[in-house]
Amino acid sequence: MMKTRINSLLFCCLLPCLMEAQHLFSLQQCREMALENNKQAAIAGKTFEKANYEVNTYRAHFFPKFSANGTYLYTTQKMRETIPGGYLPTFVPDASGNLVPNIVPGTESAPVFKAYSYMPDMPLEFSLSNTFLGGVQLEQPLYAGGKIRAAYRMSTLGKEMADLNRNLTRAQILVQTDEAYWNCVKARELHLSAQQYKEVITELLRNVENAQAVGLKQKNDVLKVQVKWNEAELQIKRAENAIRLSRMNLCHIIGLPLDTDVAVSASFPETTDMPLEPIDITHRPEYDILSHQTALKKQETKLTRSDFLPQLGLQANYNYMNGLKLNGEKRVADGAFSALLSLRIPLFEWGKGVNKVRAARAEEHISQLQQHDAAEKMTLEAAQAFNALEEAQLEIRLTARSLEQAEENRILSRNMYEAGMETLADHLEAQTIWQKASADFIQAKALFQYNKTYYLKAIGKL
Image 1 (spheres, one colour):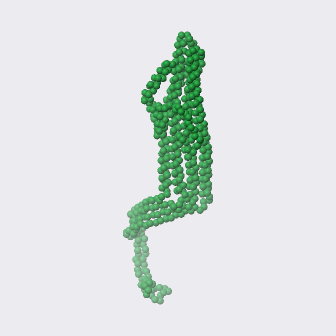
Image 2: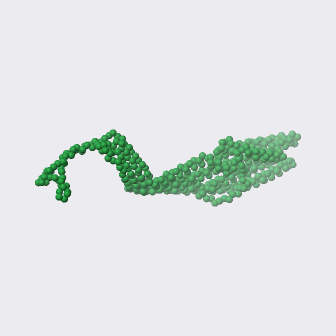
């Protein structure tokens, strides 16, 4: 027993030195590192960034669109045409100054002109060589059946859903981090418990061997204790493996190399009483995401309906043209303004629009039913987490009481065994009961921390 105390004291003295060689992390530090290094969190962040850009894209549809265009043409092709000439009748002014045919009097029924003028043939040559056209254009939708507004609303809902997905991803990462962290704490405490059990069995084995050497104990008693010592050795090995694996898992989650020597800076909290709130799932990101999905389906219905409503738009243009030549002389070098107002009214498409809108409304109703179904499942999940946390709190109290009783029983068993009033088998059984009670108490504390995290996530408070 004296050696057990010396070993415990030596371990406590060396513990600070061992901790300095390790990377020491608290639960909050592990959470922050996991959120910073987790790939899923990065994906959720980029998804939100993408959704924000999409909102800005759809917002631009409310404003006029400006564009510029330019065209340049070079060709050796020339268009040639000749207007034929000939003799043309003449006209002279009358007393009032109006032009009247210059005909010979008395030939009105078959006019004979006093004089004729001659016009020679007129050759024409058109050339488009080095012609360019440039202009600016403005387009403004005036009414699109609600399509632009519905699309913009859908993009804002997508952005909000991306933000909610970030919160959901954050909660999932915190659950994984808490599990990994408390697994490390549990593995360490189980290892300490296994060491204490082995120290007790080792001391008992030494005493029994000494008693057997002087003839006070049988060889059979030594073998019984050795079997328990072997079990204790196996428990320590399993605990060491659990420590190593839990450290590797924690390193994986917080973004460190798997072989990093990390240590958690806390043990299980002494206080396990936690006020339980009424079950309310409206704070969960999943619930809000489902609500947004239903709202998104409503906007999709409006978007579908807009294809079968009138469409009104305005287009304005200003173009400048230069380069058209007639008989070698430039004839066009000027700009012009034009405006176009267009209206499109769907009249009849054999029920296509009505059926498409009805199909979209059916999808909207399906989304509402899915939301109600998922809400009931989330409520059930929260109720299960509530009950599990209550049971975990009770289990801690019961296992703590069992450990106190097992400790008392172990002390009484040791005293009675040393006084020769109890058999070795009963004394070993008392040690085994204590070791199991210690492990159960550690498991109960770990289970409480797990269920606490699960409960907070189930009510949207993580």
